[in-house]
Image (cartoon, protein in one colour):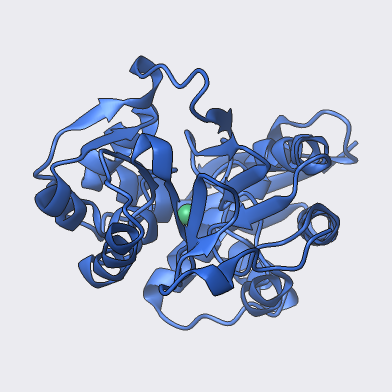
Amino acid sequence: MPELPLAKQELNTMLIKLSDDAYLFPGRTNMMFIKSQGIMIDTGISEDASRKALRDAISENISVKLVINTHHHIDHVGGNSYVVKKTNATVAMNKIEKFLLQNALISSLLDLGYPLVEGSITYSIENLEDIDFTNVIKVINLSGHSPGMIGFIHDDVVFTSDLFFSTDVLSKYVIPFHIDVEKTLMKLNEAKSIIRDKLYVVPSHGPVMNPSLADDVIEANISRILFVKSKITEILAMRPTWTYEELIRLIMDSLGIKQENGRQFLLNRRAIESYLGWLQREDSISIKISIKIERSNLVVNVNKL
Ligand SMILES: [Zn+2]
């Protein structure tokens, strides 16, 4: 396995050259460039983040013509307006993610369960499905963290977006955010074979990995998901009836989740709800949960099978 970062010493910028054609701009949210096609993948959390990436890309003679966002979360699309203004690039997204970005009220309901975000998108967005990427990049469906999230493969590089998180993030947040954690688990297992014969695995957050390290981190993410699922199952089995609030509170307390602010609480609650939905759909576990209203309280009933 070659040492990382490959050929960084050749460049006078922050960009890391991962292949003849693929460049990484590492940051709080990693961004990538496919030089031959003028593609920029994700634009970071803000104009500031994308400005630095774009400046470096220009100095490497990369001319951005197409911005692809892996999903609608703000830390992946925050620089779109700036990049469009500077380069006149087309923006393309999976159509579900496009809808969520263009409808902030709905996406905030989806992600948080409470509409905290308002905003409008001033640039037009193409459907990723309408663009022919044959012989350009291979787009991969990584739905789970967000409903239409994508990653891609180009040369020997796999970009995995928010499919999995570093062990540091797992320690800090305990429950990584996935809107459909069951689907994420499936995609994590699929990813293990996708990355096997590649050189570099690039997540959206954290350093580039070789496949063997990425495999370990994917395993840690799988273990965490299964641990959280079993912990929630264990808690549910303690009593036949829970009010929704006490159940959520006990799950958070038992997992040692720290709430830094209201937004964090809502995100954590949404992440837990993803597990409750999974348990409700699953037939093979020892409990069956149902949800109803009793005296204006949302109540979770647990039947042991
Ligand atoms: Zn995300």
